[in-house]
Image: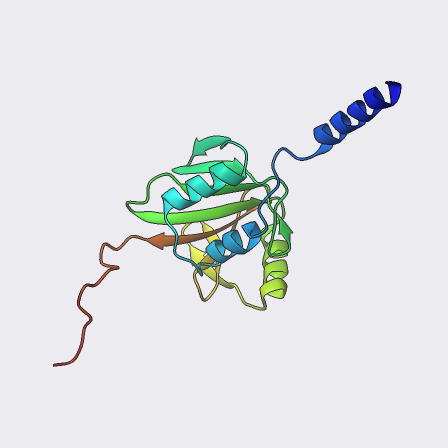
Length: 165
């Protein structure tokens, strides 16, 4: 009887030490593809995906919904939080907050993906942009936002292809 209670306590201790929810095996591939602007997904998809595979969102701020990243490593960097815009009427945006300076993140991602981020001077400072329009931007507190924004131009679907007459 004593061994059964010891076994029960051991199993309980193991369950307490396990993460609340494991990330799916394709999590990194899907999110990295979106951050690199190599996928087409909707805001509703990302909200559902993050609500399903991460814990409940932690806040709505800056026209985006934010989730704790649960220790995700994307592109060789540790991600603290993930975000997706609230409304897709103007833009589809998905992003990650990384607790490293932008130069460090830039170097790691360039090595990991064998790609380049080029500096672009914006009104609020330098941003680094890839050929696919993936963006890195440094924050005042030495963190980095890595995101992809795809603007809704209202003319993405064409029922009749353009052809010469």
